[in-house]
Image 1 (cartoon, rainbow, N blue to C red):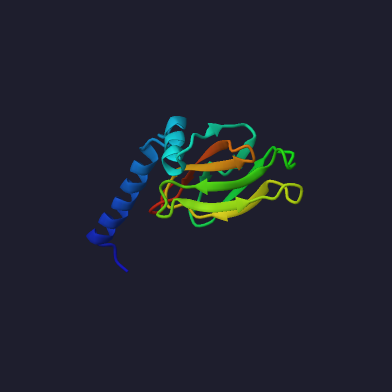
Image 2: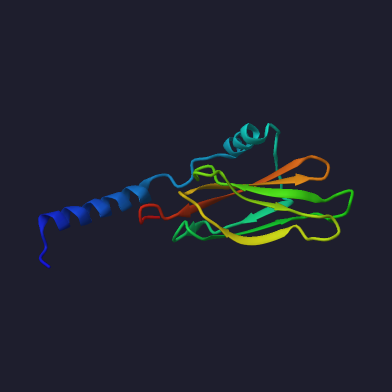
Length: 149
């Protein structure tokens, strides 16, 4: 196969696209934007909390199977327990990527799984507690889109 202008142009365009992606700001969403997003989605105010732990890699080579671990500090008694945890990826075509339900006294509020992400974005976890409060945690994940991180 000989090197043609078409091949040179195609490889140059790919390199330029990767360079632009690397120069773009990696993280532009603030905590207020995540809280506003959850308020628009649920109609209730969520509180950022250290009790809810969302662990995801900051960078991952592909958006097809991004590992995710969620845990909530809760005694899981009838009076104080986690009812459910929902996970949202605002830039995905389907915004809600996972939902988990827990039973007091029978389960621990911990989950490890993999999710699919369509683009680099803040992933937001929302835990509903037995008292009706909503706890929020978020994690920025840069995934490869169009072959570039």
